Length: 325
Image (cartoon, rainbow, N blue to C red; front, side, top):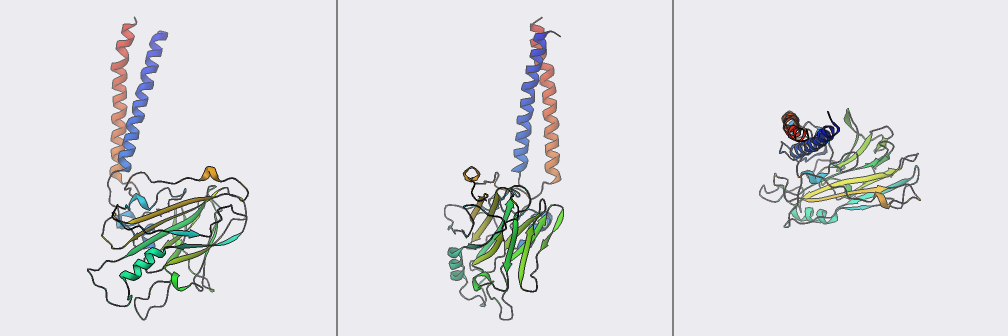
């Protein structure tokens, strides 16, 4: 083979490989945006359930670097939807120090006021045709090192009325509207129970270990958590949360008020500007775990791409080589 023939063959192979990459990228995008069976989650317990039963398959949709996906992959708003803000106070935006505790307050006063308008008497029988408000919140701290994001504590015994569920029946005891979970890949999620003093405590010390706060829709108007930073430097630590609120359950993903926040907290005394960014989701809808049909489609598209490359290599290089003889 002459030098010219080799160059022509190398150029043809390079062009063919670029075409393969385009085909595979297109296939991946098609798979990611493919409609599959998904459902919204009205209780935090469903995040850990299997997708076949309407669960999240272990995805929590906080939008953190460890999670990737946020609430907006399913829930969407429209121009006619009322906007309900979500507020976060107490984050150490100037930087965190080692083993330092801070109280973080999460609140949604506008939606809480609207909830009371739609449900003025929690113990009264509700009209089935009346709007049914709902709210959901998931939040976590995640270190970029993958470990050591600190400790989260929630004082169930000292909770104020705004953190408790509304009293829908006289015989119910006041209860927190939030749950705390310890999550790690390959291990079933553990719901943290209060100790003898009524304290819920979750510590992230090992690689991949996460502490997640999840709010149920029960009439609570705010949430207080105490975050203690890790005892060693772990680089930037992200606070990420997703907040979804609706005035009326519709059975669809459209028309919800969706708020997402993802804030990097750097070490005290260091510049954090380069970490400031918004994490945005890609497709409108994505199943919590890929199904076999999706993998089969990717396999078929891959084989077609390889066949096209071989065919073009066989038909495209020969005329150029013969023409140079």
